[in-house]
Image 1 (cartoon, rainbow, N blue to C red):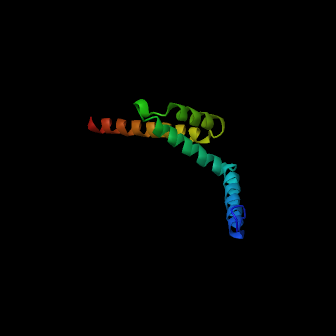
Image 2 (spheres, rainbow, N blue to C red; image 1 turned 30 degrees about the vertical axis):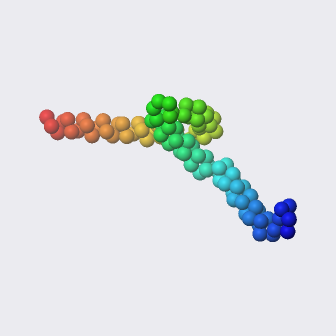
Image 3 (cartoon, rainbow, N blue to C red; image 1 turned 45 degrees about the vertical axis):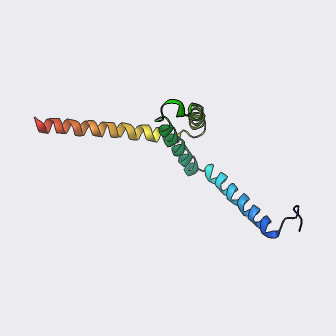
Length: 102
């Protein structure tokens, strides 16, 4: 066989790779897929924002934020609700401790 000849095995591998890509694209189009991507972007942005100085990837953060805001906004709402509930719980616990110490 020469370099331009493709074996049956190679064709089957390519076909399998295409099937997996199509399956992943289909998943991304589902509600669960969009939520997973939204969460991944949210957590990545949160982590990248912790980096200081020259190593901070400002353009990457901006691009991720743009994608999250315009294509995958779902997890931002979930996270903001979760953060608010957590803040209120901590506040109540602290108030209870202060009252118990009086």
